[in-house]
Length: 234
Image (cartoon, rainbow, N blue to C red; front, side, top):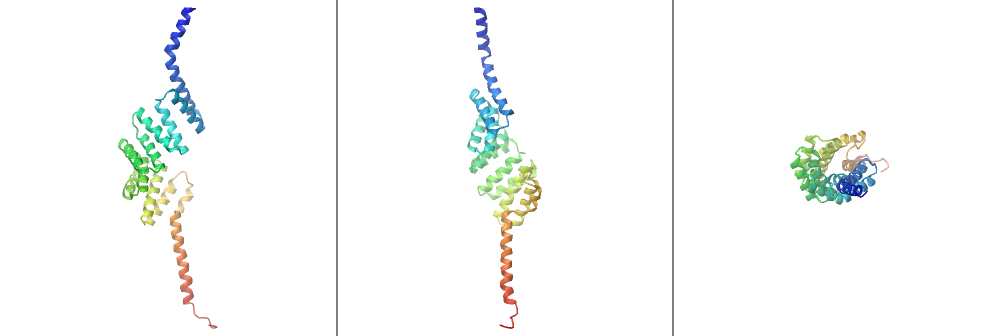
């Protein structure tokens, strides 16, 4: 009996590290299977409490934080991931997105640049670095990066975002016709927007055309009244 107890103690002592790891993995797998965002985060967090160097759990949780708009946590989780795992272009891109959404454009540009250095064909890094440049007032580099993202032809959303950024630069620099053309392309290829919307001009363009129309009507009314022949009773 005593010998059995000793064997049981040795078995538990030997297998304890594996059970510890399996517990973390079980929570991680539950997070993967669950369909509720907050519940998934809860499971990934529990996995990390049991296994603090579980790199993949940081990556998955960071993505979920991004969709919830918690950008400071996005940055934190992906930076931790980089400390624990080999650097990936997508990881730096997500850190850049966190900074971009937080309106911190310089660190956003730095992280998108690191992503591009790791993967020169990563269209999303160019597209979102272009937007960071635009928001930081660097229109020249914004157009260069938007052009490159469009040239690579990544997924439709990325390409649409690149067209949209370039349209904003064109609009802000007075190139209204090019802005309208790019905006229409952005809408036509964005799967998040109904196709029929692609035929409509951007709001800013519509406002300009409306203002021109109003000026034209006023011109006709004023000069039309002046050019009208006098009434016999006058």
